[in-house]
Length: 200
Ligand SMILES: [Zn+2]
Ligand SMILES: [Zn+2]
Image (cartoon, rainbow, N blue to C red; front, top):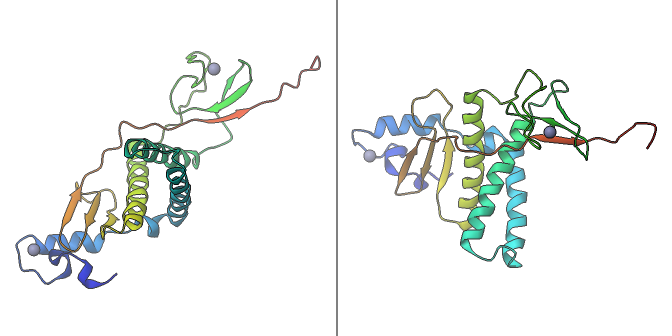
């Protein structure tokens, strides 16, 4: 990154009162790509698809693009949740078509049943959810900034470093962001099962 693409409070050229603190925040920040290159690559591929959908008018308006970007966020969150999947404590749903779910809430995500469930709901701890939400948002915003060539940069701060989770900046401006993870949608993993009973 060119030094002149930083706002002067970050670059060491500024003598204002908050400059040392802002420099410290910038130096401690990391890009989503450095943290999760696989997620960044996935988001880049999804944006290739979005570009085609916009060109074909399948996504016909800025509002529709906004909804699509929200869906990209939900998909990325669900994939990060799915990384924690184990082979135990799945929920069996006998309705047709027979399926098993890896649920995050204490109910069947398809029929809403709340009895006879695994003892564990697989919702990650809130610090993990916050970290996932920051990663997904940073990866999507960074890709958006790069593709629109607005000159904005997106960087993350490790959790537990005070209230600032993300910084956005271009050559003139810096935005200090605190991110909230809720409300969010995370889709449960579903596996459809063949009926192996002899009469079939
Ligand atoms: Zn300054
Ligand atoms: Zn069910």
